[in-house]
Length: 235
Ligand SMILES: Nc1ncnc2c1ncn2[C@@H]1O[C@H](COP(=O)(O)OP(=O)(O)OP(=O)(O)O)[C@@H](O)[C@H]1O
Ligand SMILES: [Mg+2]
Image 1: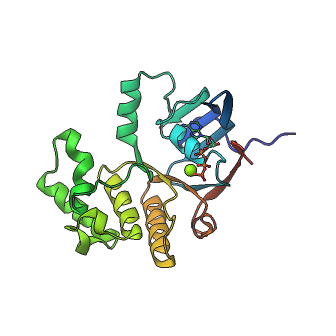
Image 2 (image 1 turned 90 degrees about the horizontal axis):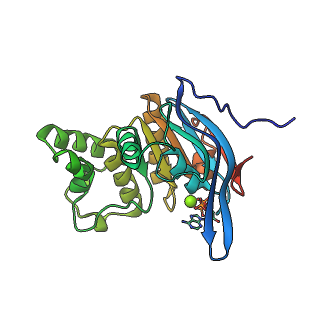
Image 3 (image 1 turned 60 degrees about the horizontal axis):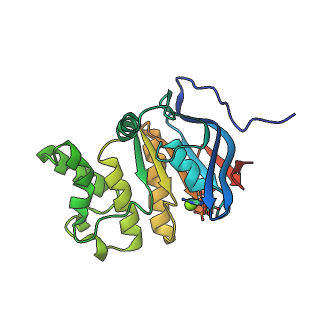
């Protein structure tokens, strides 16, 4: 008997879900199957961690879960709504409303201060109001960065940038937060600060999925589950 890795049924408890998703990329003459027949249901207010070797498909699966990457086959749901058949602008709107991303390639903008970076996601909705500045400062305080608010981001340490990137994502108060290697290259103290923040957000009701190589995160007792990936599959 084969065991399903997780329920594939959408339920009111589900924040994110995928059913039998595949993602194939063309690499010259060959095809790479980055994600291969993955089904997964992520409950609300949970902290899940995707672990697996380099090339396992973690970043690709995070992209599919968040509606950034369309699967080649299969279904993906955000907050119970299937996203694969939505028109692009509807999918983008749903994603913007529900999902925050802290991905390394969505890095902070150099030449701007940390506070300006945290306020940046508000630009499409007319920019920062006075109360938004106060909220941004509250987020910086939460991540131990308030004293760095006016510093240009290229002058921050790696750990400070990583925490700043998460704070920037949180300014839009997303109910779902996806993070790619949030503790990469961080020392013990900085990594622990990130894990503390993720567990605290979960306790406040946020749904989180993080991809990581880092046992400090994947083996932390506060995570709800570690999902192991290899060769594009959950195992
Ligand atoms: N845009 C792309 N075009 C072609 N191949 C891709 C693309 N994105 C990912 N791949 C391939 O898909 C596979 C899975 O990549 P993915 O980035 O999802 O893995 P990962 O588990 O996040 O790896 P890492 O731990 O190194 O970040 C790899 O073989 C990768 O080379
Ligand atoms: Mg990756």
